[in-house]
Length: 253
Image (spheres, rainbow, N blue to C red):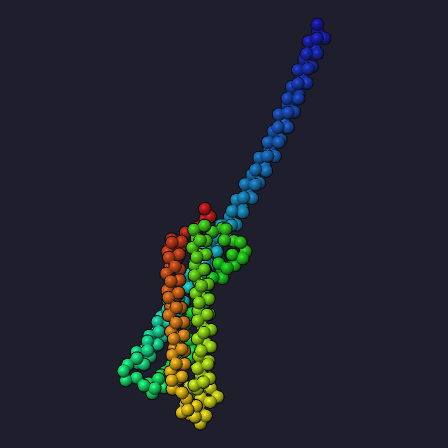
């Protein structure tokens, strides 16, 4: 009987030791798991902190680019409006009942500028383009990305439109000056007897038609570019008001 109880006691002690070992093992596993979770949380926090810093920097740069565009666009719009006003003055004078070939001669030789003044050197979209190429747009809010994408599309359309009109105007302007040398310009036969000879023996009808083509090309170039820039200025200001009015750091939705 005594041996029987001793055996039971030994079994109980053995079972107790196994239970203690199991508890210890489970505790060790829990500690490891908790350590991994804490490490992951810290890593996520560090990564989010890094992303927030990048987001804040990029937003600051985008805002700076947009505000620089507003200034450039407003300055350029004023210049184009003045140029269009000058062209309108030529149009009004040449449309009067007393207009003559002498009126056109005076405008061509002393007033009409073959050069183009747009007062705009290009859009400040380096930050946006670099974020597109690097895939960083994802750190911004979807709403801001959508607005910036639309703005970029309008900017590119404006650039393409201006380049197309510029090529047409440049070609017609060069042809006109080659066929009808202008006094006082740096053209090989602009001044002197050869230039005078060309002007004396020109076909006035073709001269009028050629200048009308040059004038029309320049008018269209300025007027289209003016409309595009006014539209882009409105869009740019709307983005600044919507996303940067309170200097809020935007987080991805």
